[in-house]
Length: 476
Image 1 (cartoon, rainbow, N blue to C red):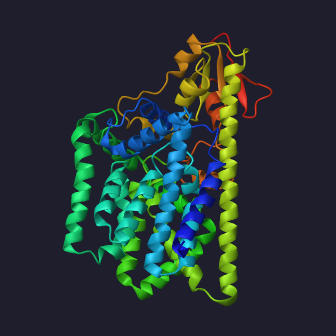
Image 2: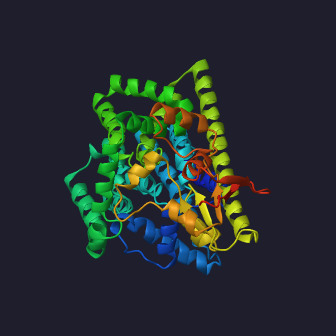
Image 3: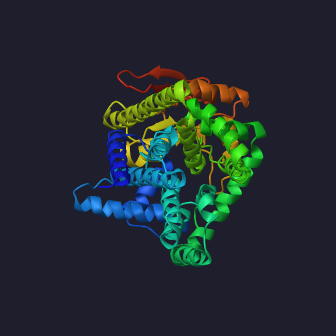
């Protein structure tokens, strides 16, 4: 067995073990719930913008069903973890090809795989991490002269999300060496995949419930409604959350690239800048910036390997701190989401809570309604800023909270705000951009008291996540 193959196999086994023990029994989002519904019924032609995700999700779900695993959430989470690991292996192979160093390549793969965003999105049921993952597989094929197969994979990445375009700066060094024959093979591979699928899905993609046109319009309006400082703060947070301790090494490596290869520096700088407007609208704190993470990981790994003496020891210690801190961040987040899932199930089984009770919440409502507690009705609450954003979303109306109070005397509130290690940073950003921030712990109670000023809030015992029963006055 070759040294390269041993590294690839070792990386796969380590990551599948680590990812595998952290993805079970956590809550999923509204989008995840919709995705799971499509996968469970084998719907792969709903829209080409998510075709890659739906196709692979159905494939893994059918395979898992044969093996006795009938939960599409688990099969989808495993599928994402599997391809995320293949993406890390792809990054290893690209870096090895570029720098001819196994140690640099394995460091780049580790930095990428253990960045908190890649790690946590690899364990959810959304398409987001599949975009850079398949994109890296495509880049690895291109780096080793497989332009036809690489373009097929890139088409799948594009069929998962158009944001796959942002992986292209990473392919720049290979693109400089491409021949006319390889260009033709690449175009053929892309057309065969992207073109054929789009032929069957273009109507839904252009005019469907979540068409490109609708999403594009929403994004433009959302960006227009944001203050520039808000956009910049989320963009910066997307990198800080995942790389924190390694940021100084990145800037040192970027300066070194500027001195050695100004063309590569311009490409890298472009890769950073293009995410400023494009990665922001859904406010996912770095999810769409993951297509830049391979460049980041590659540069930092090379910088670490170029250091000498005591500075090498310091950089390796920083890398160790980076892995430990991200392990803590992801573990805390997954623990919180497990508690949330357990709380939903406990509410479903709590006979003191009447059927059809309204549950005010600001985590995803659809999973509560369809998976965890179908006898209850989750109703979303928003900050004032987020209420303004919903105005940009066609066919969506805010709940009538006054009508809910009049028609339903059994109302509960789940105080399910994020309780993560980086909450203080989120609070700082929230204050910095004048309350345009995330829904943090305590937000729900504050919002509910503003909506129902005469209500009393009774904290229910024996729940790991705080749950309040709203006792409304007779005037309500």
